[in-house]
Length: 324
Image: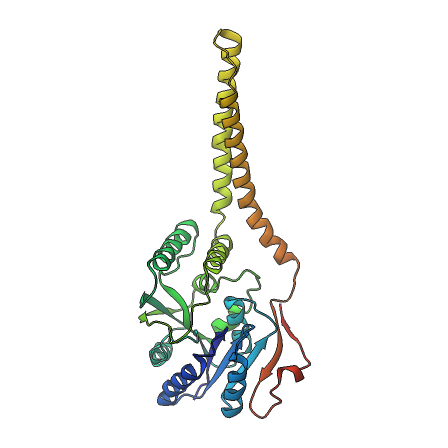
């Protein structure tokens, strides 16, 4: 039977990994498919690495890849996809909010001929009102601003056929927005709806700052509308300023109503100065991303791997793997 790869990025998930491993192996053994379980540790500082070492030494189907530092969720996913060798690759989080019992459903859709099986989160148990509304707003915003359409509630819990993974590996941008990349690829796609349970244990590592960075990556990667907005805004205020200048000249030359207007001048200067800073900020976001791309640095580097019957200490791993 065809090999299935399961890629799981983890960061400080010491309380979840053992239970997650047991649930996934139970679901896959019920199906009867051979599988490999690839954990990508994204620079954890708790006991996550020790638990991954123990599991990988006990089960030859498990491999742990240790990134040299924290590179972020999207890069860790990319690393796992680069190392997966299965005919189909499933990506999911290790906090059990992506239910392992859905694995047979995803594989069933793949067996029907679908090359991308995307899960759609209809709701999340225990999630805050702010996070739920901000997530909904983000999807509406990016769909309105870009040419691609991303399903609201789409998650990084998905199945990709091997040919889709090979296509994905051709995308080299540093600011990763995998949901947009996969959505823009095409191929035969199916959707599976689910309700995400609460985290099994621990706290979410997806802070407000990371949410904002994720949103900015998505918008700037797939939309030039902010740049056009800045241009049209500048054009509008330029016309208004030109009209006000003509009005001032007219009053000065043809009437006797000219009076010192320091308040008007100050307000105009502050308004135009603020507008310029906003426009420069928008342009700066895009220039900053160009700057990151042209440096051509590796996307990530690996300090070690855990596999059964191999030296398990990350400190004994001398090679550094770099992916550009």
